[in-house]
Length: 215
Image 1 (cartoon, rainbow, N blue to C red):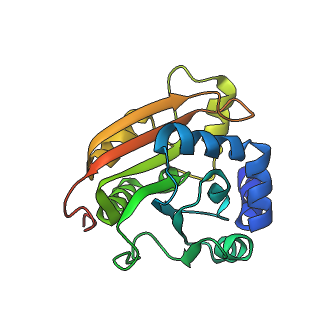
Image 2 (image 1 turned 120 degrees about the vertical axis):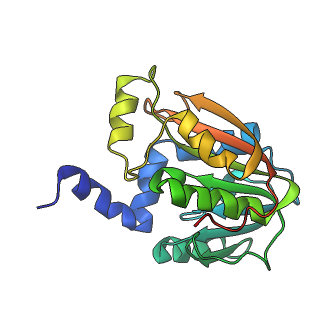
């Protein structure tokens, strides 16, 4: 019999249910903070959104050339219906997608993605982003985190996240350093409506040849 956590997580495979939960948690304000304070996206830049979900990050972005990737076909279909006139969306797995024809990008995002991946897969994501960026491009990620000083509610929520690989800030940083020369880590406990610990990475200096995933 499924556990309570599994029964709660299952409906989130639906695009509508997924965004409703995100909205209740304050995802729109979190996206705006990420875009303005960490990515500092400028109009006209080329943006890659890895694990784009239903594409709602677009609402926080200025006018950009945007490509969104997600392995969930329903999420991608929902994103195309809502934003297809101003963005491109691809149903694709980050472990196998070819971005040669789409790049180079100025900014890559991976919002709420790394904590769903094991270390090898997460390194593959970082290398995919690095290989798709212009030499002065940057990768910005955001994931739930575990820290010694986080509120009890935030730790409880992190332990029940759909992603099974919630990490501490140092672990996220070490993964990104496999593909980037510079990684800046920011930990926040107050971005969401509920007490929640977010770990943001600003990654610059993509390593040449990083697009080849580690075997």
